[in-house]
Image (cartoon, rainbow, N blue to C red; front, side, top):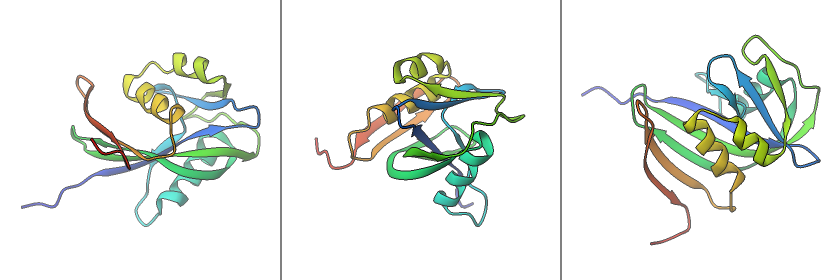
Length: 153
């Protein structure tokens, strides 16, 4: 039997001093939080800082792990999402992220059209301090399960 293979992804909800949310417009997926794949030999934290800097031009102060999702449809993925605060730097568009900016939470949620990324942003905006776990399939998108660590049925 072949060992399972998963893509590992990190992302984060970044807020600035005015509590506005940082979104990027990915050239394929539309508006979303900064996120990307963890490269081989890289830790989750290293990957998160690299992805945020590459996609936005800014650095962040990392906060707690807020959510973990399992994408069950091939290619399978594990997505780890954190809460972060803007630290320094100027927002800088790139070929991969031609637009980016700071938005109020409600405005940001309305801008994210992709249902996977919209649910991801909503979960991060509603973070209660405990890690939320979820699973989903794509084609079409469907939530398979959700729970929050520390909460028993």
